[in-house]
Amino acid sequence: CLVAGVLGLRQPPQAILILVAVCALALVHVRLRDLPWAKPVYIALAWIGVVVGLPWVLRGSAPAPVALGPVALAIAANVLACDAVDREAEAAQIAPKKVWWIARAVAAAGVAVAFATGAAPLAAIPGCLLLALVRWPADRRFAERVLDGALLVGALAAIVLMGG
Image (tube, rainbow, N blue to C red; front, side, top):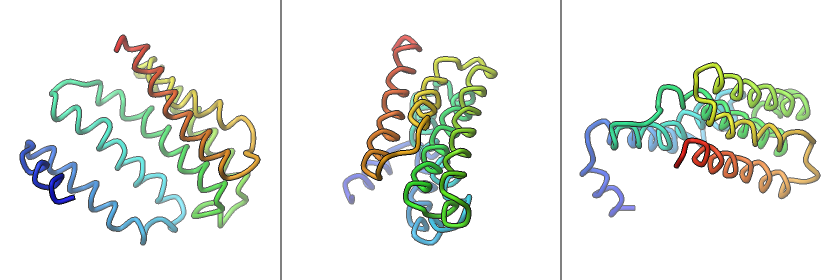
């Protein structure tokens, strides 16, 4: 951890700012994770900072503005679905299957945003997650593997579709 911190200080100020923000979110995660509807937002923001913001800042080029919507919505849908399975946060207040339906709607919105913003290859990320959300999971282990696996497959498909 110390080595990562020292190496992080050698980065541009914008990258350090993103890393500090993500670290701050990680430090308050214990307090925020049970707040209904906050968890998907702050986790999506942290992921966006790492997978979109850092490459954009460090390389100076990336599809950052158009990538924000589809990627953030895919991550938020994933968090909602995991909360539904675990009956945490939102799913502790309303029926878990309703939260699962909300996760489906958020993933579908991610697909729509990708096409609407001209970032069609990125539709693979929320699209794969939407396919994983077709049916209610048999158990928690199944859900973890399928939901996280869908994000991985979607991200790899997006890379291939973008010619990477």
